[in-house]
Every structure is written in structure tokens, then in C-alpha cells.
Amino acid sequence: VDESDEITIRDGRHPVVEKVSKKEYVSNDCMMSEDVNTLLITGPNTGGKTVTLKTTGLLVLMALSGLNIPAKEGSLVYIFDNIFVDIGDEQSIQDSLSTFSSHMVNISNILQNVTTNSLVLIDELGSGTDPLEGASLGISILESLEKQNILTISTTHYPEIKEYALVTKNFKNASVEFDLDTLSPTYKLLIGVP
Image 1 (cartoon, rainbow, N blue to C red):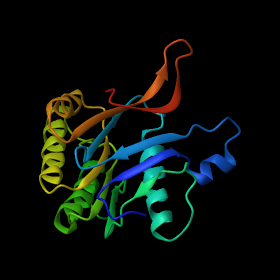
Image 2: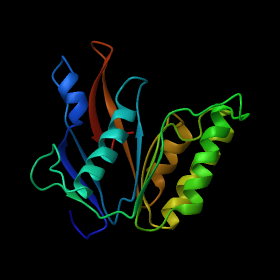
Image 3: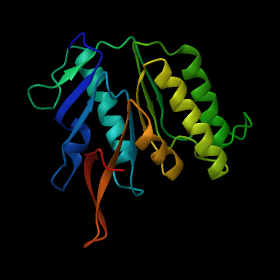
């Protein structure tokens, strides 16, 4: 645990997935610092984007709870005041919430309560609506968080958001690798590669 505003996870592993996986488990690095406060992860469905978000959030919570984390020496976690997460689908017929509106309720709550000492994890940013509108909305949300210097990790399929991250300061693209020979995901996170 460190007081510098960064996350450095070296060969981090999700402890539950590692325990139940019958295959060799893939560990990943996740690094964010002063010059990269927004990490955008892209890649195929079932390629490991959401697992990467959940693993990062879980390892941060474990470290802040005083637990050793399944990662290599040299890993650092900042003391966040809160971790905000929008993962999954909370649609509800009873509450008249579609997939899109349930995400917007969560994200609205995040934007109203986040501080510069928070970590934000958002899965499939802008999904559940028209792709062009979803991409524009996603860019606006990420831009708002970045202007407040909030460490944010988000996943997306939208090329407009990937392109925005390529040309915007403090943003970094990453992707989960896909083996074109076997047409299967490797679950390896490639930082710097959209």
C-alpha cells in the first residue's frame, strides 16, 4: 500500500478464478500512474475484459483490507477513499430500468459521489443504446473523470472511444489478446495496444 496516486499490479491473479480454473491461469499486469489515469480495455467477448476489471478491484480491496494479494513483489496500491463500479446489468421491469438506463443510474451516482481519491471501474461503457450515441456519451463520461484526475479503468467495443484514447493525454489503450490461429482468447492483457 502506497500513498502515491497509482496502481501497479505485477502478475496479478484473481484468487477465486485461479482456484477453480482447470486450465493454466493467466496473470496480468495493470499499471496506472500520474501520466495514465484512464485505462481503456478492448477485445473480443469472453476475452477477459471484465475479469481484468474485477481482478483489479478485488486486489485493491484486499490490499486495503490488510490482506496479501496474489501478485509479484513490487506491486503498489493507492489508499482509495472509495471504489465505484458499474459491472453487470441491473435492468428491472418493476423499476422500468432498461440495460442502458440501469447503467446510466449507476454512472450518474458515480459522477455525483466520486472524489480525486476514488477508483472507478466501468464495464462496457456506453452500451445498451445507439452505438454512435453510446460512444459519444462514453467519451464524455471518461473526459469528465479524467478532468478530475480520477483513476479509471473501463472496457468498451466502440472504435470511437478507442480512437479518443489514442490521441488524448492521460489515456492509455489496452486489449485482451486473441489468438488468430486458434480463434480463441489468451486472456493476456496487452497495455498500449488497442
